[in-house]
Image 1: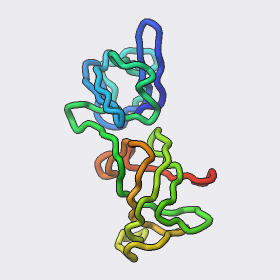
Image 2: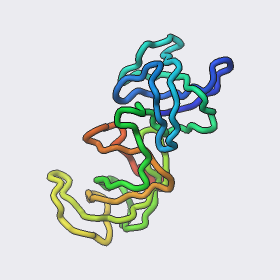
Image 3: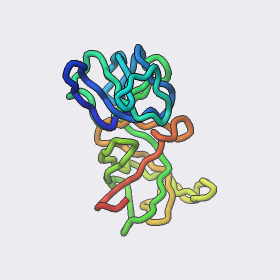
Length: 184
């Protein structure tokens, strides 16, 4: 999960972020989603010390081959290109719980979505159904709107591709917050 990208003299491009799942080690061919940039990890460092491998929870910098700083951004996700690589989603379906919103939310509503380190405008394309917050059972199909206290299944369309995963598979990439008018 990329939090920042630096250009370091004599070394090159160094993305910085936290390992969420799996292992990051030199020699791994990674793909950055959603940009679909593939490169080799040359080295991995934590607190200015070289690591043979980084594990979940480690905040690391890693040097990548032949990629410029301009090509990578905060919010990109790096993953093993050969083992279930991350991809950008043009749209996705999610369970949304409205915690604190002054009015009704209907199809077309476009707040900012914070997912891992990405911040991106995301349209509520279709509110498919209202669900019971405790059981997850459907209580209303195709509601006109939802309001504070409601839980719903919504099809979301980011303004540009976003790297998200199912909460069951990768919880850190399946969790998000929606913000509007400085309210989360």
